[in-house]
Image (cartoon, rainbow, N blue to C red; front, side):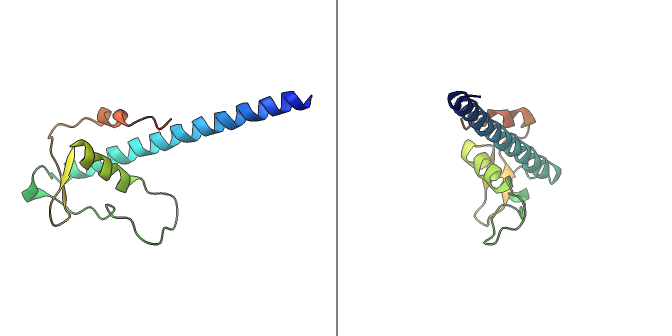
Amino acid sequence: MSDTFQIIVGLIVLVGVYFFSRKVHVWRMQRAYKTVLSDLEKKRAFNPASAVNLPYAKTGLFKIGTRDYRPKAIQYMTQTGVAAMTDSGNFYLLKRKVTSSDASDFPSLL
């Protein structure tokens, strides 16, 4: 193969890997969003009085293992008005009927 062809193939593979990694990132964020949503619904946290503490809401100093997307999902939920945080750091849902399809509203990050 010629050098030009190898460079072109290499660039195409590089771009493909980049887009694939972005898709995986969005997919994992959506999964984390659905997990947090189901946790809040199971615990019936629908108002400030029933707000619950989520142990994974804060990130630790030392990260061991794979990346945890749940703190970012909680941050996204509070910024978009799906969930809210009390003064004591507990979380609750602002909307009672939040569908898991709302997780598809994440920006595509591309």
